Length: 229
Image (cartoon, rainbow, N blue to C red; front, side, top):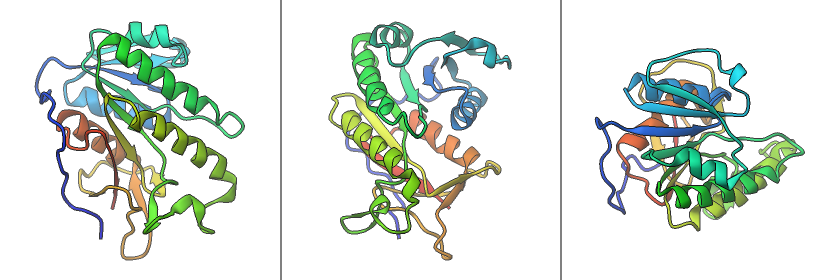
């Protein structure tokens, strides 16, 4: 069974209920958009960073949309300045896996220059363990076509974890599916969470809720966690 509690190892200011500004990279992706809406629903101010503003047509109170290149350190630093937290929901595609390391370096350095230390990263599940010392992506059950992406995410995870930021890396379960927000899920650390039928899944809406939970109530500081039903 996964851990059911969260252990606080570092102390940061509790930002819940304050006039908090969040920078969100990857806001027009499937997960990024839900994270944005979850944060807005809870009253946070969100700066959504996208490559093309014309693709972000919806308007919300407390939402600012800016164009920016997450692989440009100077742009990252300029955009993040004056915010209290950064969320990266950046992904990539097969054939462009090397971008993840560039993005990780850029966000880490840009955050340092901006003075924003709190960073939450939408991660990947392949590097979660299915047994002691055995990563899911190293088993026969892991889709072979996805292994290059899993390895790239694992390398990016190392970059974030070696920084001196107050980072948190949230690995999803094996599947994120469309669904509804229940607010009910299990929490673990480095092991893939399975249900009684050996499924590892969560709705995209609940995954977004878990990300914002960690923003407003930080427990996994300089650590990884995962969530699933």
